[in-house]
Length: 255
Image (cartoon, rainbow, N blue to C red; front, side, top):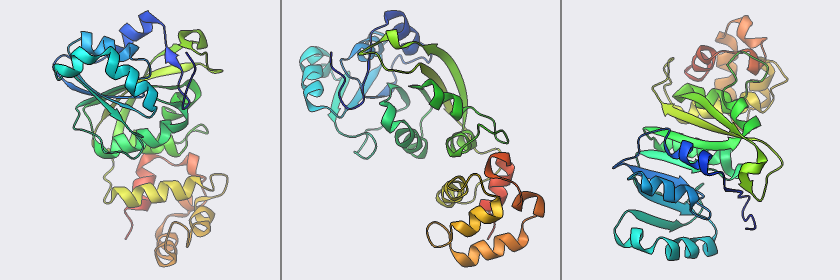
C-alpha cells in the first residue's frame, strides 16, 4: 500500500498487539490519529475500546468506513476526516496512535494542551530520544522541555523499518506519555511556551543573548529588560540546553 501524507502502515502483528496492550483500553474512549489501513484500530476495538479515528486522507477514510461498517453502526468507532493538528477533536481519555512523522511535534503539543490520561504514541526513534533527553544535557531541546514539564515520558520499544509498509528510512520508537502537574509551578502555560520557544530559537547563544534576540518577535522588550536585570548571572551566561526545568519556570514566571 502506498504511503500517503507521510504515513507508513504498521504490518508487524506482534508490535500491533504490544502497542494496543500497553494501557488498558477496555471501555475507554481512545483517540487514534492516522489510523491508515486500520490495523491498530482493529486491535483497539478487539480490546473493547471506543475509538475515535482521525484520518487526513479522504480515500483512507472511505476504506475505513467500509471495512468497519458494523463497528461504526454499533457506536464503537467514529471515523473523522480531518487534520489532527487543527480539526475539532471529540472527547477522549486515552491516545494510541502511529503518528505521521512530519506532524509529530504539532500533534504532541496539541494533545498536551488538551489533556488526556495516558498516550501511547509512535515516533521516529530520533524524535523520541530527543523527547526523553534530560534537561541540562546537550541533547535537550524545546521538545524535551515542553513535554517533560507537563508529563512523564517512557520509551517502550523500538521498531525497525521492516515493521512497516512502505518501509521508512528510519527506526521508530513507541513512547508512553502520562501527564502530570509541573514539578516547578508554571504561572502561564502560553507564556512559558513562548519563553521556551524563544530560548531554543537561539540555542547556541547564552540565555541573555537569546532573550535579547527574541525582542519584538516573541517577547516584549520591557519584560526582557526586567528579567535580564533580575536573573542571576549563572543563568544569563548559560546556554538553553544547560538549564534545568526549575530555571525555565523561574524565567517564565518572572513578572
